Length: 233
Ligand SMILES: [Zn+2]
Image 1 (cartoon, protein in one colour):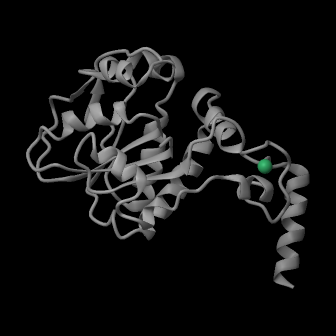
Image 2 (spheres, rainbow, N blue to C red; image 1 turned 30 degrees about the horizontal axis):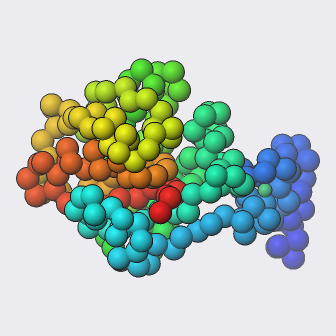
Image 3 (cartoon, protein in one colour; image 1 turned 90 degrees about the vertical axis):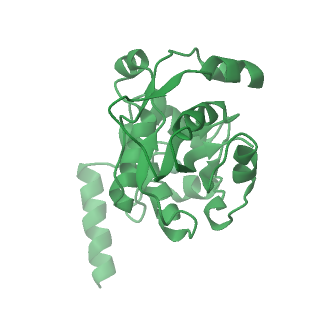
């Protein structure tokens, strides 16, 4: 009886304020929350948070020392995930970022490898890029993680001092050169003896995270873990 009442109310609400799927933008049924069932089953979840030495951890540990690493999804060039990331990153649909960040937070809370995180650090954008985009997508994911996990958000710890060109067009070694010396720690912060979670939206070669990590790990006794929405392996 209760279920039927809920279905009736939601169907009525949807008539007045239609809700659309974050993946394909088609109208949602009363029993669907943010994604339609078809999009939900197409999303390429990794479940990396259940395995310590997963392929992402292994890839990153060749570049810098990390305690744990996970990605919510495997990156896909086309399809539901790529559409969602595009809307979030380039079309200003920030609620997709909060939704995916919240999903990632649930995974981290389920995992035994992300228990002692003491601060969350988003990969920064250069101030010029942030101004033109209006927001930093990594900061939105980090804010969702911070809220759900009850861990402080350090959004100004890292600063991007070099406005790098679009990395997507560059090869692996060119990316490394481009992001080399691109990051600094804000002079007003002193980091010591902390386990930080470094957060980004999409990881491709790992060059950006590696450049951030090298700056953070120069501080004494910093431990670093990594969480991203999507990764290429
Ligand atoms: Zn859909």
